[in-house]
Length: 330
Image (cartoon, rainbow, N blue to C red; front, side, top):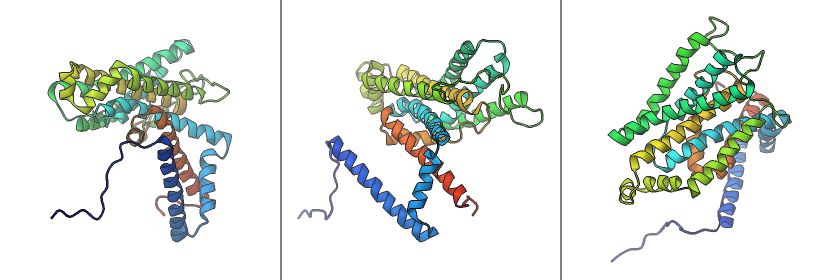
């Protein structure tokens, strides 16, 4: 006699966007309630004061708002770069390396050509060089995957460490001041290669560049022929071949795009934010972007919200640590 299970779970195929939004809102409220209980139990603080500190840390002043937006745009740009690769089920764990190579290309042009080219031409060359650097770094594992079926997870991960060594080698020649083992702020006096202000803000161009990629990538993945090919290859390479899709070409092309956008993220960091290069330039954001891409289901507009949420909480955590005298070693 067949016995029915006490609890049966099944995935609902269709659910309205209103209901999905409601579920997420309820989950957020429950998370705040649970966190409030944890705060009271562990540190005996008023949860409302802690939540206010989080808000102040991320959005408490105009400067903090723009710092939050700046970091959001960097994380968003990397997430956009990872979206086509992960949608194709190519596990690109190498965004950190692609960012570093893109950033190093920008830094090199700032150092060697900063006083030799007009501002617009310099920025265009930096942008293109960073894209090409990331593109090449992304294509290397793609070619090996396409022709010899190598493990892209290990390959891209190991290339991160190679990229770190490349940057370390470059720092030997670029260090300023000599013997400091750091590059320092590049072209601090002339600001050659720095993205100029837009809307009266230092990080205005960061927003324009990354939001433009947000729209372009959404259209590319959802409405273009190449976006359809990426989706088919991601579902089944055999099905893609049966449908007449050149799988090897799709793999290499998609990773070239993924690497190029991650390289551009390096440009945004070096030219539009830190104005320097180091092995910590990527700062782990290449891995955080994987979370953003998956949570957003590769929808770049949803990535905006998820990226902002993660940076909001990160900035808030810094504020809490400062305001309440907390630190990692406490």
